[in-house]
Image (tube, rainbow over all chains, first blue to last red; front, side, top):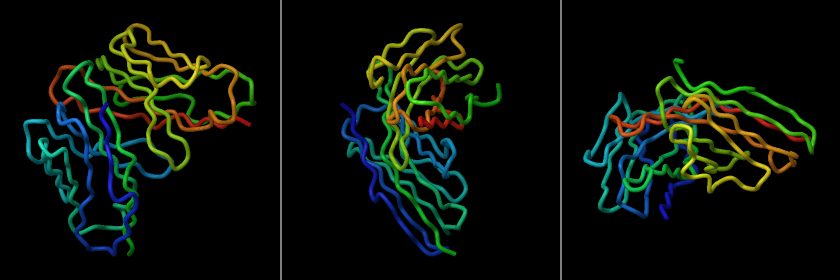
Length: 113
Length: 115
């Protein structure tokens, strides 16, 4: 059974800092990994999707990396801004079966002005 | 449609009543997921549809919960005899299956409060 863990559960940083959020998964047989952000009272917004054959994806100030063999992904946020404050979740899609999607519990980020 | 649409966005119901939550996925998306998120908690998987069939309904918490999907499009999640612990936001998501990326797109959720 796939298990996805995100550390830390919460993070508070001053504006302008670069930061790294971590996601680890137990079964390396994955199809892809997706990072989302969730604002309070809202649904989930997709940030980046990394295919299992890829090592990283970039979008603006965000960079996500994937090390499938070690079961890890990181989301790097450069020059953080107060508007980045949200909960960040990673989701892993298995490569077998019907490609079940398993979510981590999230990292709640607060960027202090 | 342009995105995943869920209705109602907010629902307050009395304990013991039945509720229906609707999800309209992105046009052409064959995969559809329902998740539940209680206040301050992570996402709890409920059920997955591929087309009109549900190969994985292992997350439905009790027999009071059921879901169906018709025409490979709209899905309805029904909760019978609601209990206070059913209060949560119910999130629907859809994606293409077997196509490039398989990016999952979420709706804004249906916020259910059982009083």
